[in-house]
Image 1 (cartoon, one colour):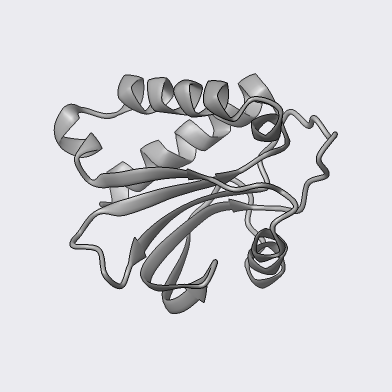
Image 2 (tube, helix red, strand yellow):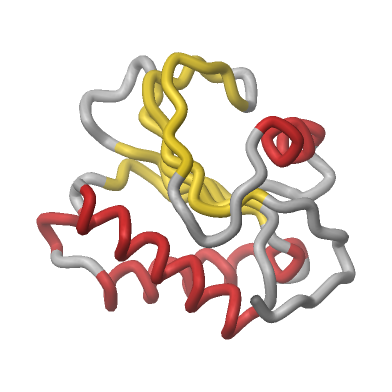
Length: 131
């Protein structure tokens, strides 16, 4: 998993460089999920074009990971920056382009068995920061 996580860090860096900064980039293993991770992402550039952002992130994932590795991802969850839970995560875990491991927590009203927070930093809706 260590090499796989580093590739997620590299993916987050690439997204930040190409589109602007992100506020949250994390992998969540929900309590009710069977070894399938949710990729959770909040960024200013998502809100203007959610469909385009989802297509872009999906394409970048497919370019970065093999089909077997992609099967570990249950879904891509795009979160609005205005969601108070994003701010709560940003306050609880502050990390830039790294790996913070969290276990047995509640995020976004879901019980999370295991999480890797790769990037968690407060961003404004109209802010574009290249990391």
